[in-house]
Length: 394
Image 1 (cartoon, rainbow, N blue to C red):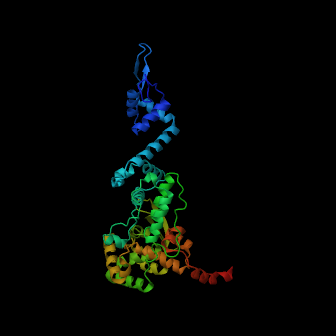
Image 2: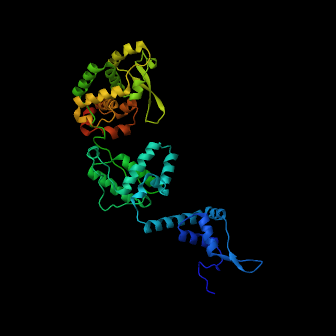
Image 3: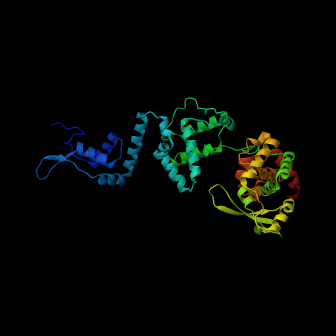
């Protein structure tokens, strides 16, 4: 009798037959592999001499796969590649739950959690990565406001993340630069994914020269003074708290929770407590109180307790109305009204110190790299101008 490879009379050899079952079934399910072996393989019964079905438990098959990791990995890659070739990719692949469960994406999430990445950061990375796979370029605020559809890269199609390569990411980055959209966060998402897959990612970078992403959020002295004059007329608590943030670089949480008991009257300093990000732990930071700020704060310090008595919602409402009236050209880009004063601390501090990023970073709680990324690097003209002030003393 002629026997085929899959014939029941063919003896069972795990190293040969388990891979055959995986390729045919396109699954690593031990129970389904068990059923395949029982259907296709027989052996001779020692007592009767007749051929009987080969019976193996799912547990024994699972253990065999674990004992042969190299074969398992080769089969996994082979089966995945076959599925990609045979199945058309549909947009359902990019639904949140489905996309997260793709093995290579799931591995990236595991890697990010291992690096203690925050859940919001992972959600952002997943969102960017999905749009990269779909060839959807980032949108500007104006495009979103106008209800425009995302621009799709020509001839991109839908890419399964398993097949996303460095060349694909470089092309996407090139299109972002060409269309003047996106930026560092998108590159970081692609780098994070490539890194989790063990693929090269160093080429995927962007140089930050000249103005940074927040460099335009600068109110010149006359506009800045007009804002403070408006606030002083409308609400002194709003004026004083904003002036505090402008002079110290504090965020809204640290400002509205600032207390007189943390003030050093002799050194004119104050300890504040603020979070570096939404879900981060509070940090204790020491801030210098300038002479003009001290004049405003001194009566408040003497009274004790919190320095400012105003609700965040009221404060932001006043600031929104003020910005629309005095700096309408910037108002739309100021997403967090009070945080604008932290930007002004950096903007004015950099200009006053000849773009001394080390000093301003220390005072404001940034890194030098963050300041350069947000506000740009010192230009050559400024550098040579500053050189006149210190070169004679070297």
